[in-house]
Length: 330
Image 1 (tube, one colour):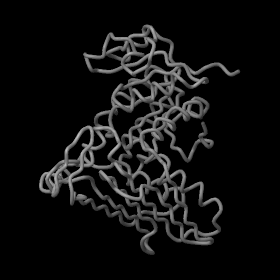
Image 2 (cartoon, one colour):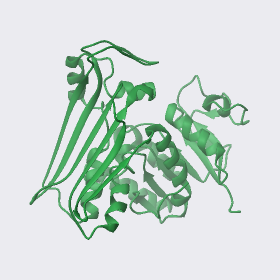
Image 3 (cartoon, one colour):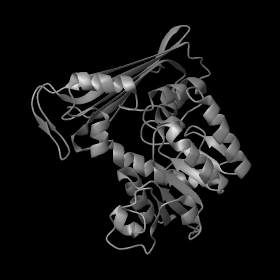
Image 4 (tube, rainbow, N blue to C red):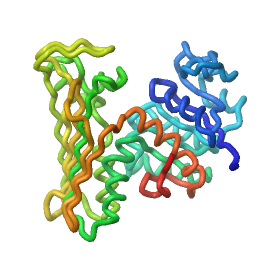
């Protein structure tokens, strides 16, 4: 049996803790440390913080340097922020410590169009360290980009790609429900969206990956977002939504070549949303219409993070994407 890969979980919020639990259960991986800035978690047993039945005998550390002074680590699974300004320093610190990274950071999944300077800096740091960095998740990272690319392998011609992700957010974690505007007034929703850092992150990155892989230039990119308003009360463990308040959102992104629209992505997430499914429609030769039922965003993100660890450990140094790796499997 191959030697187990020693993993440090950086960020122990709901998703980070779920990743750590999955890592602790995966035979090919060994959870050896956890890092979080929350003083309520630092010093407590990592197993307790991530919800295991038994302690791991490893404390949660408040910094990477403290963790590395006590644990031998091969790969960092990273889950802190979606946005470069918040995670950039963390990436560079991890690479300077000589560790591979698998991150949930959406802007990292294909950063060369929206964040080219940051992408170049991380790529250079990774190559200096001889390590690999991957940004992944269910979306971006899979449903609207790498899965689509794999499906086009059986097409002789691709004229247009449309992906729609429709999800019932009633059973998602609280931070996700908050991120889609649950419980807000329409005016507050529109104001928060105008400020940025609310809503789904990753549509530009998915379109960028597809266009770049096909060798197409993005002549125009359009993005719209609108609230999905409740017509009747909706209640979750985290929100009590009244009629007229926001129960979620609909985001649409479109990418155009000089010849017109080549790709559209539609993301709908709302409490009580019916017909929860993901649909990929490819027009070309042949036409494809693929529908997935049962894609749980949190479970899928946790799975792909843990399952990608070995591929990243074996990959060439630098900043890579899901299209660059051999197919990630369980």
